Image (cartoon, rainbow, N blue to C red):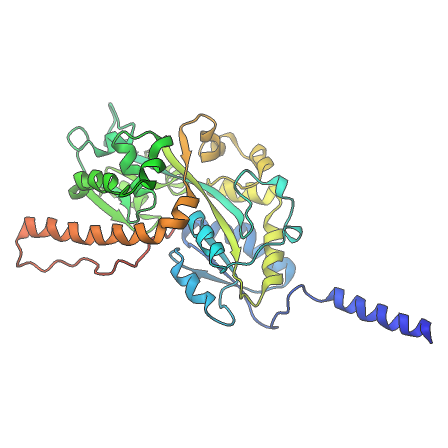
Length: 380
């Protein structure tokens, strides 16, 4: 009798172990949210479609423009419509602090020791490493070309429009670098009371010559059409445009590098499947295959040795060894991001109105955004 009872207990225990780690509703897709464009095309080819084919799990891809606002809205629901989300580093910090994201169980993902410094977090696993670089069209500047952010501001020597991302993040840093601030001192200034004033003052100097981009594809497109003569842009986008035959050049001096992360939303109904995909994406060869399609640095150390030399030279990680790039301070932006973004957007609306009024007179109604809450990020 006792033996039969123990057998039943063992069978019950075995059944429990065979169940998914998290209860999931059958028939629903795993929702993956990313930034779209050619980066998501590469993710689909290397990660999403092979995983779906091998696991039998259906995937629903969603695009968003980044920022924490949509994630915060999802977090208010009993059951999120999003499961696995790609976020920038500063949004990782803010979302983790607000308990929007799952605290990761790394035993279900892989070895932390395989990842580069900064690519592992309690709430996120590194997706790839990227940089905001300066790029210009070599067809326009064949002799004595621009070499720095200070040159980016020099419209007398290098006439023409410039492209900058329509966010405080990265744009404040670039403005301070153009003003002559050393990379190591940028965040000391931004942390000081009224620290953004110096950046905004520098931006105002260039404002009539700036085209503000909102999508990761725009800098390359504008450089190609000569709508701008130089632009800040994502290194992977610019690199792929160069691969396609465009005569662009990236300037790595004082480029700003950062890491994007995958996070699982706290109220995701498909956590088990999300963990399975994170584990599927972790192997070194898959990370290298992704970097070959679009030159963003793999989050895993040993993947670099698998890359072609020309691909390696397009990566911020390799450039970092020369001391020419510096890290984006995601902890800083995770704290002040909302405040500085609102400040920047309000400043931009005001200054554009002033410019248009000066050009055309006060009777002209200027079509500029009135909200200070939008956040631009489509990439990468």
